[in-house]
Image (cartoon, rainbow, N blue to C red; front, side, top):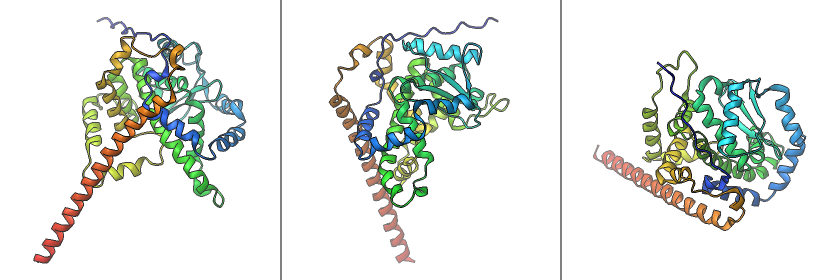
Length: 335
């Protein structure tokens, strides 16, 4: 039996990140930049790290730089992703010996990508292609610098800061986290565009949520069952579920894996993915013509719809809770 040839992927000449970016991502970044103290905090954090060179040296010292003779298969997938997006500057790629699944794009003027070794152990080649394209999406969108700052702010506990410093930093930290979560939704779309494989894009979320290493992974995970779980979570609005969901994500950098899976499924359903595959997208040469107002208008519509749904669900939950309490009082009086 012969091995089937790899499915060819369509290249996307001169594609601009705005073609796939989530409307809330760009608006949240504009909001972040307008938070009082933002510029001062970012400058101080960058200075503390020794600038871009200091950040890069951290990984040069304690990770393996990928290339033609270091993880050659991974390097080939990385180059392939850059070719798909017609991105001429191939970012440096590192593998860090870390047992917790993660990856990231860091740096300022010359961003680089880091994959944790756990990702290589859990993912097949198709899923690695998704992950590499996801991180390249962060690089192309200019996320790397802000994600570096966001990661540091998560590590720094506001309670550990002296006096009122933690309170003063909290608005900036919350703004960073809100943007960070929305930027992931943009990069997830880039992961799909780079791989052009919806099932591998979804199975990446499944493995991030609960993937296991060989030999325990053989036939143990089912994507269709996981997507049913994702839709169940997104659609669960009983009682105070909506409030619990809000509180559980307030201080994290990434949306829940099931939410990301459902969001990507929804983006495909809009037809935007197919339109890009047909070549209907914004070129980088024309991207500068896009007005900030357009991004804010698109984000306003998104947040308005999200707020209406959230408050509507919370109102329904409050009515249900009030009804249950009333019923309980009635039963108590009858006893």
